[in-house]
Image 1 (cartoon, helix red, strand yellow):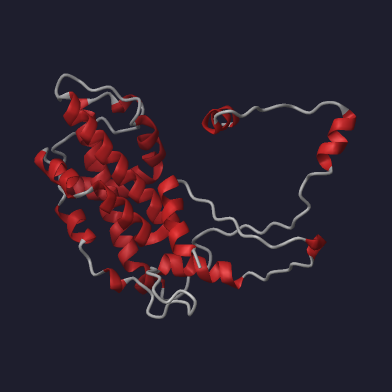
Image 2 (image 1 turned 180 degrees about the vertical axis):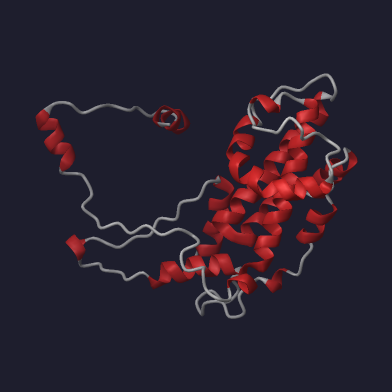
Length: 253
């Protein structure tokens, strides 16, 4: 993981400090900050959770089902089974009831493997190169939306799907993917999950309940600037770069 990180950073170098006097110097730069870690779902076990996050749960379910259809289509035209644990019994044409039953568990276990494999899978002779490239790109976009849903809520997930564009979904429909439900969810009244009263200093900020919860956490943290003369800072970690861009827009004051 460290080697991959260094590669992604470009002109970076990773070294090991061994000299005792160098270790002492290095330790003087170590942070002595108190760290408190919270997850996005902390505090979401309230009694009104179902009403607040009902749309998000439905959206997540349909994304999982659709991703499973995409993977089965890729399994028909590529070697994705080498990288992703797909039950041999699952093939294109599998009954919808079976896919709906298995989708949540499959995607929760295999989402990272699916995304990581998309750059490595090879097409078979059953599909043209351009069509294969579009299918792979479409699957990547939908998987990104599913990942964004956890870290950034409905707003970020819908932004990812919007970026795929109408033409991309028309292509998916043309090759037999069941796009109807997902397209219908994209056309939802987004005011249904925006908060009714945005913060005073952000009156035009479109937020859903997931992001509202994140902002409540960030604004509820006690800031102690007196500790060692430093500042209290908050770091929001997400999996997808796109989610980071969307949340940056939302969290700007």
